[in-house]
Amino acid sequence: MSAQETSGAQTLAFQGLVIGGRRVAAADGATFDDLNPATGQTLCTVAAAGVADIDRAVTDAGTGFAVWSHTPGAERARILGRIADRLRAQRDALARLEVLDTGKPIAEAPSADIDSAADCFAYFAGIAATLSGRHIDLGAQAFAYTRREPLGVCAAIGAWNYPIQIASWKAAPALACGNAMVFKPSEQTPVTAGRLAELMVDAGLPPGVFNVVHGDGAVGAALVRHPGVAKVSVTGSVHTGRRVMAAAADGLIPVTLELGGKSPLIVFDDADLDNAVSAAMLANFYTQGEICSNGTRVFVQAGLHDAFVDRLVARTERLKVGDPLDPATEVGSLISTAHLERVLGYVDQGISAGARLRCGGTRLPGPGAFLTPAVFDQCRDEMIICREEIFGPVASVLRFNTETEVIERANATPFGLAAGVFTRDLARGHRVVAALDAGTCWINGYNLTPIEMPFGGVKGSGIGRENGWEAIEAYTRVKSVHVSLSGVACPYGQG
Ligand code: NDP
Image 1: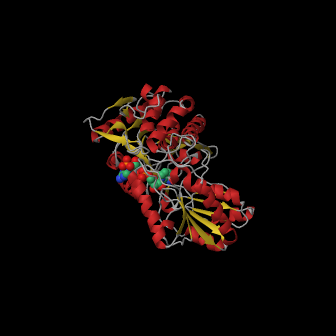
Image 2: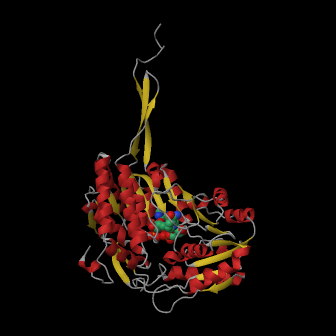
Image 3: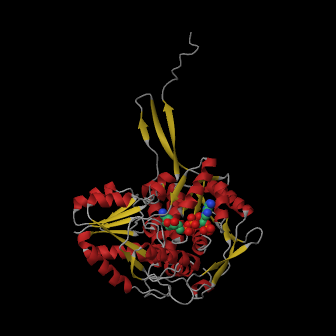
């Protein structure tokens, strides 16, 4: 990390692509500016990859793959472990970079972003050392075994809300299995993926195994279509997921799609009120509400509804919105003023549709993209604010009466990323999550994503899982090998 980046300065050095283990400018010299969303000022100038750069990155990744895929798992594990150590050693500096680039509060970034990235490399380091196939007994005359093999060069594309976490959740399992990767971060948050690549080389990762190309959706689209790519993993919107999957279909390559959501958080009458309110706040206002799995449809049973809303509003009004670098800040800046305008549009829509805005929904004056967290009650399922992903600090509270009714309403969405249930009735908790169309569920909690637990969605929220053993399956293929221990039994031409 340069002195400029650790000194507290608010501008960063030029951010090159990382290809073959080195920082490089784009072949044609093209650049774009990356803004600090909290100030609206330019944070840094970034190399904009063109077709030649993408081709070079995939080619270098192929060279890296030839080395890395033949590196023993135990050695891969040691290197991944050192990456985890370096992430922890640089925790504060990396967290600060993430805050400057995303606008999220510094109170969150060290743990939610950097520790999550480090945990991910540590977890998959453990698996790298123990990856193996199976022996299959076929009697005295034969046996079979399976080899779990890497796929090749994986393309990975990230969203802007958790840049280094997304890069790590994709890179760590892919690399653990012996793959190489070309990663494209969001053009709005390019900084920490490059830092991660540098730190990997420092930890001993061979050049070319992890490469970073910068640019917009067109760069992502060109990367996905490159014939040297064997797999694609994308975190982004449903729209992007569809386009990536269509492109991957042409090359018949597998996809992991982590897409958007409109997840239900269901609070039954018997829930612990304070815990449920705390979860609803975390599920709507953490990272300014810019979290895919957020529980933005808060269903509260009639008996607890009014007390719940009063408590939620009272606590939400006390949230401190402002300078992301201030340790006391609880809600930072949205990613851009364009996104803020979108979110404000949803607030207006909620009001005009007849929902009651109980607090928030106001833009803070001055630079940046700050919005006070909003709580709507008197919402109805058909309102746009209850159907579309807002990706900002806007909670919609919906009243319900029975378990059967709330399950049906919670499932009445094209999304299926996550869901939460608050109840003291253990049987009901398990019964309800079993009935919900969601890939990731929490009982008496929300948005907890330990690396050990697979994460991902169903329906419009995506395909495949990140983290846990499931991520290993996503980055490997199984080869079956039959071994004969006797002669070939062939009747042909024997007379
Ligand atoms: P986008 O879908 O706009 O972008 C995601 C990434 O895909 C960006 O790097 C983008 O480039 C790139 N991209 C855009 N078009 C294409 C294309 N045709 N081919 C390949 N790549 C492309 O999402 P946002 O960045 O706006 O992120 C917000 C969305 O991400 C929300 O819907 C959110 O729910 C979802 N998300 C899902 C998560 C999950 O795990 N399920 C986690 C976090 C977010 P660029 O933006 O640089 O132009």
